[in-house]
Each structure stands twice: as structure tokens, then as C-alpha cells.
Length: 275
Figure 1 (cartoon, rainbow, N blue to C red):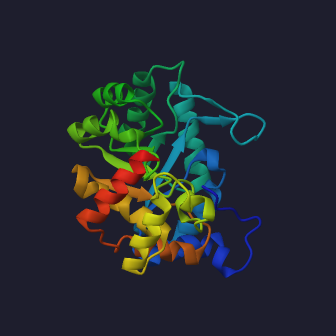
Figure 2 (cartoon, rainbow, N blue to C red):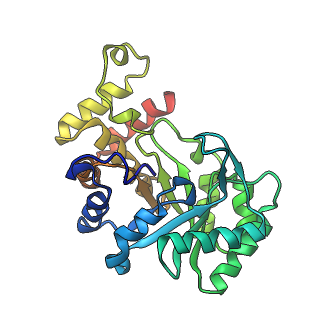
């Protein structure tokens, strides 16, 4: 989301180097969106390695005067087609592997949006459909129109709303969860402060202690917890940690090999739920 040509200093923060390091490490999914305003960068970066990439993009968020946080949602059928054509052109591809509706619309019924997205599949412009920032009812209605391959929602130790209503439906439908912000926008990667030690639930202390036992950072443990959601809940889960640094990318990749014990998972579960 934050990859940019501008402002990158040194090889470690070169966005092309970051993406290529991910591909070299065996990561196959690259996720972007028209709202991230970096589709052209992503397209250039993967051009020589397109067959190694499951390319995902999103549509629906329309910025107001380019101000972050201020946006409208457009999901009407004509805009679905327009947005897909524009994203494909910026990415320099004939087909987008996974195409998401970025946010639920309050004005366009989701059946209409997904119906138009399904037409893109029929035309060979998109391979699979996804949703993001929706309700369980949205997912149920959308899936009745066309199979929803992936649902991208926030899921971390301190953001667990997905577990309440969405997760049971996801399991029934066979949809893959793409868990964005698995370290809570970096909050769980930050160095613990004295204030954290005085916290009521001790989550930060637990992350550090478990990390010490695995020779891992607190952020890696938090990311490993999300990796373990697949075995805990029996649904496919793809954590989606973002980074603008090669070094940070390598830490994220290594987190997939942090095997947490049942006791450690239970401890994190209880402390995270209390946050």
C-alpha cells in the first residue's frame, strides 16, 4: 500500500527491490489497489516475472481531493467496468488474477456490483473475485451471484471482529481469508515502553517473552499468530503484511517459520481478546 517511487532512499527501501525480494523468497501474491496510486509501479516491477505473481487489485474507493481518509465508494456496474480497464492499463496486464471490491457501498446493491464483476470474469479480464470491508450478509448475498474466492479483512491479535460473524460463513463458503494489517499497522512491532509494562493485559510483554523463546521479534510473533489461524479455525488464511523495506520483508517471511505451541497460542488468544 505504501510502496512509492518517490522518497525511497537506498537499496533497502527501493520499491522494486522490495517486490523482487518477496518473489525471490517464494512469495507469490502481490496486492495493490487503484486507491494506493502505485499500480503503474507494481506493473513495471513485475513485468518480467508476471508468471510468478498472483496479482490482486481493488476498486471502489474514490479519493476526495487526494486527501487520505476522505473517500467515496463507487460500485455501480458502469464504474466496475471503467475501473477494471483503468487498473489493467496501469498494471500493463491483460488479466487481473484477483479483483476486489475495496469497500461495501451504501448505495449500490452488492448483487449489482458482483454481477458486473462476474461479467469481467466471463470476458477473461479477471480470474477470481474478492471483497473487502464488508459484512457477513454482504458476503452471503455476493456469493449467491458469483463465488467469492477471497475476503480481505483486518485480522490481528488486537483486531478480531472477523471472528464474530464472518468466520463461520467463510468456513461454509470455502472462501480464503486475506488478513490485512496482521501486526495492527505496525503497532505490535514497536519496541515495548514502560507504559506497556503497566498495561492491564500484558500482551506486549507476552509477545516479547514468546519472541525470546523463538529467537524472534514481537512483530514476528504477532504475524506468526495470524499464520496459525488456519490450523485453529480450519479456514485458509493468507496474512498480508505490508512493508517498504527489504530487511523488514525478510523478517516477515521468517515469521512463517515461527511455530507457536498450543500454550503460547492460548496465552496470546486470551491477552489479545482482552485488548
